[in-house]
Figure 1: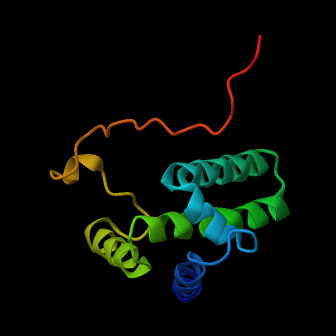
Figure 2: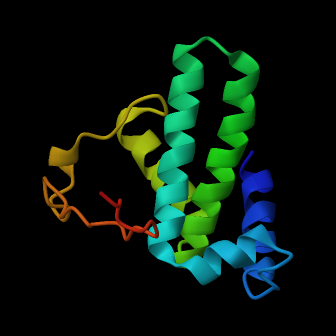
Length: 127
């Protein structure tokens, strides 16, 4: 799995300066970080909805979209997959692979993160 995401990351990096008329990846990079974050959130919601509806095949498809959009956002934030794998390994050593590390064990991470308003491309509704 890591190998697949590593390959996807390299392809995303290669495509980011491509022609936005041809490349969805280049279009996302041209749109900016807020649009990338919005697409990632939309895909996550779609996975949740499909899982709640019991649509296994849709969960598979939407999960692939979710991973693609996550990798695009990693590339924009200059986060390499190997950094994520290293963090997962560190957490596995501390808590086991199937546990999420409690926030209180991260003194360098504030308990609550600042909420960032995502820009909207939609025009205001007319009344």
